[in-house]
Length: 71
Image (cartoon, rainbow, N blue to C red):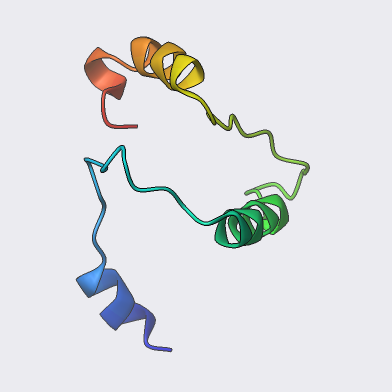
């Protein structure tokens, strides 16, 4: 694995297709990867917000305006 090559070719998505869904198996794998990520001071567990319905997505989107619009 060439980390320099990966860093040079990475892409950050800023807009998503609301009709495209992540398959459940892939989503569960992602959650496990997130759960195992280390912190800078090695204090786990992490806490994540999972928005699995439109109402939750709207609440999160409403909170992320201005400076945080793309976070």
